[in-house]
Structures are given as C-alpha cells and as structure tokens.
Image 1 (cartoon, one colour):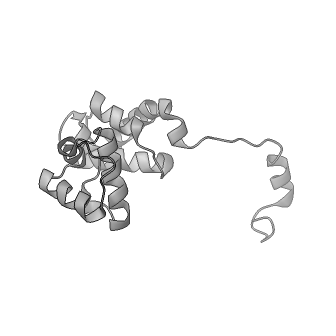
Image 2 (cartoon, rainbow, N blue to C red):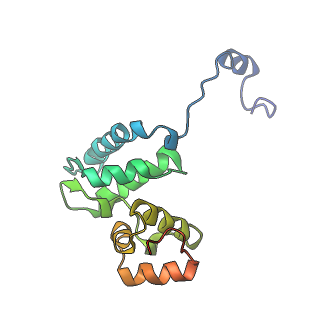
Length: 151
C-alpha cells in the first residue's frame, strides 16, 4: 500500500517498530470457548435471541475443528447455529453445517473431520453432520474414504 501511495510511508515505519504475531485459531483452541460465548452474546443482541450457550459436546466439536477460516469461520458457524436453532442451548448437530450446504470440494474434508471426531463411527459421524446414515455411507463410497472407518 505504501508503494501504491495508499498508505503514508512515515506512518508505516512508525507502526512497523513492533511486529505482533498471532497464531492461527487452530493453535489457540483454549480461546474457542471465550470466542463462542462472545459471539453468542453478540448475536443474542443482534438477532434478539436468548441463547445461553452451547452443550459440552458442541463445545468439544468446536474446539477440535481445524478452523481453516480462522475466527471468521467460527463466527459464521455460531451465527448460523443461532439463526437455525430455537433452543436455549446450541447442540452438537447445530454447530456443524449440513452436507447439503457444503461446497463439493469441501465435502470430503467435512466427512473426514466428522469421522475422525466420531472415531470412525459412521452413524455418529452422520449425526454430527446432520445427515442420514444412508447419505454418509453413499458419500464415503463416493469419495473412497476408508482409512478412517472402524472395521
């Protein structure tokens, strides 16, 4: 931006004195509960809701997710769960986007993540994803996922 004349050169060098490195969210999973609670408070106000929090299972799932989209991805997951839930506590199946809304290129990764969290149990993975067992079986076969599944 400095080279394009969109940011003052003198200000850039004053700010550049200290470099602050923040680890990505997947490296700060201990921050996830506080962030989730912050987003719940925010969306309670914005959406005029009264959600008290997330279930322990939902928090465990949120804490285990790799969060490639960082804090913004977490924020969107919490927002979506609050929009589509009418319950005072957000449950595990509400924090995980359904397979029908996931783009095809991310679908395999989502299934693998759910299978890993379910220790290879396809029925539990289907429940985590909010889809039927039949759907998860079909998708596992379609993507050739076999190394995560319990025999």
